[in-house]
Image (cartoon, rainbow, N blue to C red; front, side, top):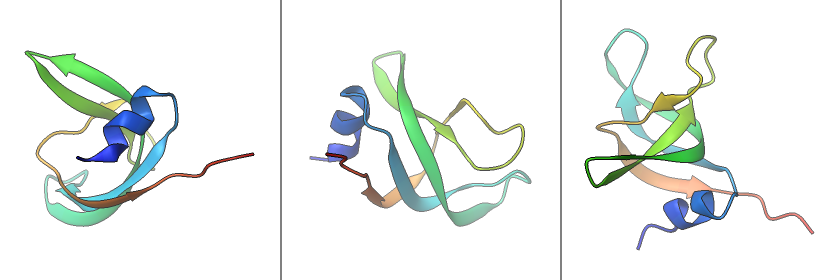
Length: 74
C-alpha cells in the first residue's frame, strides 16, 4: 500500500511528489509537505503545505502522487 498515509497518521510528516493544482488552477509537477489527515465522507485526504504564502493547511484533492520521502531521526 501507499505508506505515506501510515507515516502521517503516526505523526511523521512526509514530502509528496506528484502532479497537482497550482495557485492558478493549472496542473504542475510539484512537492508538498503532508503533515495531517482529513476525513471527509469516508475519504482520507492529506493536509498539506504547498510552500507558498497563504497555502498552508490545504486539503490535497485530485493529485497524482508519484512518490514520497520522509526523514527518520535517531
